[in-house]
Length: 234
Image (cartoon, rainbow, N blue to C red; front, side, top):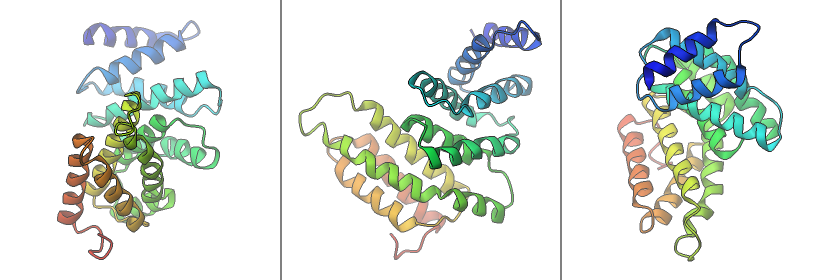
């Protein structure tokens, strides 16, 4: 399947006027999401700009939102490709996040996926990394999202449906983004609020969602080992 997808992407990439843009987007999404590792620089160089172009769309219709969500979800899957020169896409993904902060045009999953890709794109010196992350206020955004997602961890004990599984997965993905940020040793503002929101989430998921609870505990371990926050905050 991987070889066939790659061949189709390269064939479509060669086309000019008759290029099927929708097909190219769908091929790239499949390629990034269903391949654990991609070693072809040419393949990554074809797919990432194609999907970033979709992510930069400003159309706020439901159909457009879903297309943007799929493209960002696929891009967040590309973080495991070491061959990707991620920093060259920093301006585009920063624009996606900044526009969302002003207009709230992304779905929850799209917003989280944009942050996942953004954090992996940062490959500058530590001072510039900190300036960029703090300008976009990562800790504030992560804390706000976790606070809004707290309601979903109450559903199970209130006897409601299991349709909250998507939200639970988004919570787990936020923890992954926080871990990536910590591993890069980037100090961020509003750590106190972020830690407080994670502690509340820890308490609420301890009995109902152990997978979330243990990931939360892992984040705290990273924080302590990296000495990235004041002990007073924790």
